[in-house]
Length: 380
Ligand code: NAD
Image (cartoon, rainbow, N blue to C red; front, side, top):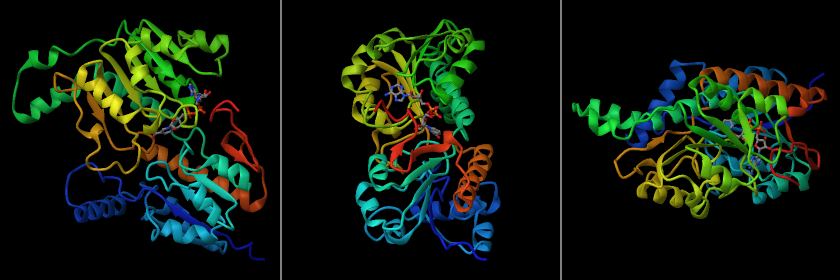
């Protein structure tokens, strides 16, 4: 017997190289297409469809895949109206707003192929009894590695040094004047969940002086000890002690704009800030101003508010007074080829559980039917 027919609408990353060069938009489209064709492990692309099409179609489901997500004529607006399931990725987020949810008469499940479901209006999903599921843990190591890399490239002043080499110059003192060792530095994380904790684990061998964390969910004492971490209950007090601050909490009402002009004043002068969590956790202009004044020595990350980031987004080009301190990249830390394999498989598992009525992995449930199932999206 054929299973019940579901309409699955997938909007996700199609042009992974969108911001890797500054070509015209036509070239960008072509390059994305080529990359996805040449590399089938780019599963999170429109071209490769998370590897789901043969399986979904063999079961009689309709499967619509698109990267068109903005504006009233977008595919997302058009197809959400009668979709049962919407799959999105955080890398090219289809913003499932309250208005869109109101139009989505059949919608029962939103699946995030990845980690971080803030692009869905979670409160509206609770009210409409729409489940929000994600592939928890699928890319946390990928992101933690990127955070450690970003901390190192800021502290070591790597980007200006490399740019100097490309220019054909060789002025060691120009880059050494703003390069330091990570050894002996105090590092603090905002959020000590899967990613934040992995960052601290990976920093231990660098001989950092101390690890601090700010999180309303305290770590067990033995977990704290294992990563040399001390919880600080007041965020201002924590940032005032840190040479490096890394942001690893979800975006929700309690973390939006958390790093603003006022908080930045409490940072140590010349601190480094790394944010791979979500762009909207930081005030864009306050960060750019802090970098320009030297209050921050560097800012790095891969998340932007909104995505794709506008061409004139100030974070693309902002610099510290010595002309460096910018480690921004497009949103790709959690979408390595290794991560794509994991979140594609995890998405399939979630769909399979849903179609066959099996329970979902508890850790994957952000919003269950009518209620939040995670404590990570704010204290409720
Ligand atoms: P997690 O749920 O394991 O951990 C999140 C932690 O943040 C929890 O301990 C929670 O208590 C804490 N927290 C929540 N709000 C906080 C606040 N206001 N202040 C301090 N701590 C707070 O989640 P995770 O797997 O570690 O992922 C964290 C976030 O990282 C995701 O929600 C997502 O936004 C982001 N992420 C980014 C990428 C990327 O590619 N850049 C990939 C994966 C995840």
